[in-house]
Image 1 (tube, one colour):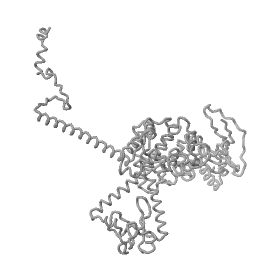
Image 2: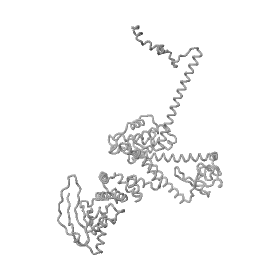
Image 3: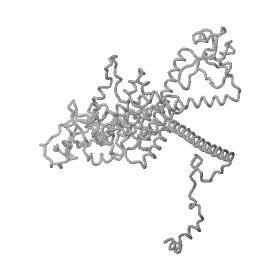
Image 4: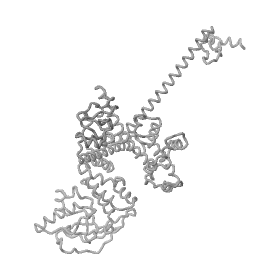
Length: 597
């Protein structure tokens, strides 16, 4: 480690900025400890007017101006702590840390010039070894500013974003992250997080301690408004409670479940807006439709027939009826075409719909059921996304993860491949079976040429090596089961298989959604009910058998003994076993024992 000092001028005899500074020969400093491997740089004195701001200076938006206290200190005593700088491509010296001290001296020099006083230089540690080394420069700038109380989340996010955009190996990014106190995932998430703006970044980042990954998730769903913030706060609180007494790696299952649901809500919102824009552009009015109100004037065209009794088509209705309109289905987010007043326009209901006109009191029941179905479908689809995310992590554990799958996972593999299951072979009969596996294995969907000896995932097998091949088998089973057994109807009609799969995932560390817990609960309740009925049936059968034996004994004049086996055993109990206790006590007296001898 070496440093060079280039003149420390007397304050009263400093030169004007346009005069060339005098330099002295480099002086070697004391050698550093053996463990200190980074360079300090050359200590030089420069007029601040001759310096520029480095492109990779971390502090750019918030608190870049020196406060009154700093200005007063620099005006009286000059800059006492050297700023950090490096050579620029144009030959100038660019500051990458100490920007506020530099600006304070600039302001002090402007004031001195107005008063006719000499201008001051500032001490600069010039890191010539950082010329062209942008990632290291940026990291040092971030470290400098995050260690100061005025550093803002906005500038931290911008600095991490710059770092993520620089091309470098993953190992080098991880090393920079360790020095800064951030995981690589946080560095990559900083750009998305910065979309929240200064207020939200400081509120959730500094006040609440959210990571940049969490801030990026919040930014992703911020269009949903306060509801998204509230739900994520609650999910984070639940994860904190779950991890409080837990040993080992902390989990974020509640957060992941909530984000899966919010992402679906956001996708629905965007799809709804796109549909509305398309309908508006086509001049089609958008109306509300009450599914449960069969007496409503608004009816879907699928409920109507033409005067000739034929099905009403969208094209024909649009051409002939002035009340042609549409509503947006809340469940599938699609346009459903309707007539706004079917009776007034002379349309007729189909025979099936005419027979379904309910009494007034059934409307509320139908409305509640419709609402339950829509909410249930949405919750189940969101849980499916969360399960997919968990399975991807389980099947691709990375360097720090488990090297082998669990015994329970092996049981599922053997059940699928050697058991009497219909869902596993049916999955391989599907044309989309490779898509599910590719998603879980984090690889591209292989292109098939139709050859019988084709090996679509040979590259994955080679990359994983021998220890990781069990995870490929698990990916096969998981993709098959999720596609064939965990469809939208499961939450309505839970199965033993679905409950068993969810219990397996929970044992592996997955956080169950409320709808998934309900599936397990309903299956267990049905199982307990069936077991209770079986026990009751067995008891009733035993009672009927006892009654039949008694009736038969009464008819034949045979007296049943109390201890007689009703299943046919006629062995009587030993009379000695039924002797009074006092007789047994008498037989144990010393006199009886001597007589027996």
